Image (cartoon, rainbow, N blue to C red; front, side, top):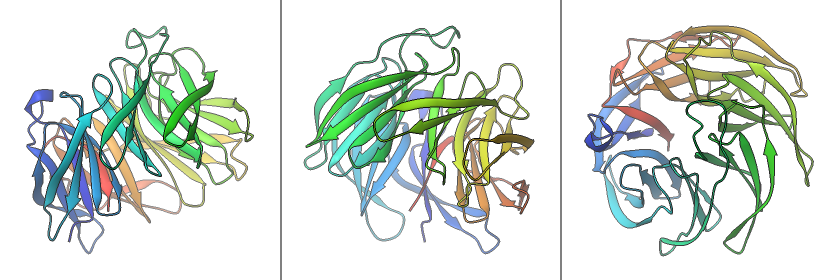
Length: 326
């Protein structure tokens, strides 16, 4: 049985995979590599809607859809231009699909059936970090049915958009502290929005009032070292803990968050048990971490103190960069 599909890098992005992989859950909570679900060129980020799986082919600049069948196999359905260079994120909001494109900072907006690019939103700006040479869109996130955020890592901006009848319109932009490099979003149980700063190695807290977005605070990630790049952000179901990956030092940072989301405490960090922890997911009290450079996935049991502890030896998975629970 497939419990996760694996986004990966193939040879066009310097990876060893051949497409989307499949993982199954074992009795102890760790995972087993089941094989290749479908060939695809660097399907680095995945999303699911019903029986359809979407992938961005990062080097090719393509958005692709697949149908789930019996077993691990995925059947290729359709494809479209992503709308920009190096798409690194895809999400479906109702009948609309949005891709975030890293190299040029564009957002591509697509009709889902048939899969078709309808319009593009341009990025703008830069930042003080060497990696901030221009706009670099990295992800999008729904606040509600008609309000979509996007993170521009290159410009230290979080953009606010209105989504109506398949049209995405930018309505506001909020500046984060210079050098933050916003990457990923999580909604806290309080309603506040948590943003991972890849370059600033911080957790930024935002407040959405229903009409305006503002910065509440910015907090350093425990265990982060100079030269690290943060990646992957998750929160516990009760909102007490937040976890972030640290590529470079190859650790997982653990933070505590108050019930109202306004107080953040740096608790500890632990070894991610692999090289370059690109993404991780939480499944009840288990964390799975995808390591791009060591081609492994490590599984951890999370204690009542929020600290992940390795369950079993990491398994071999070719160049994993994203884990999609299905």
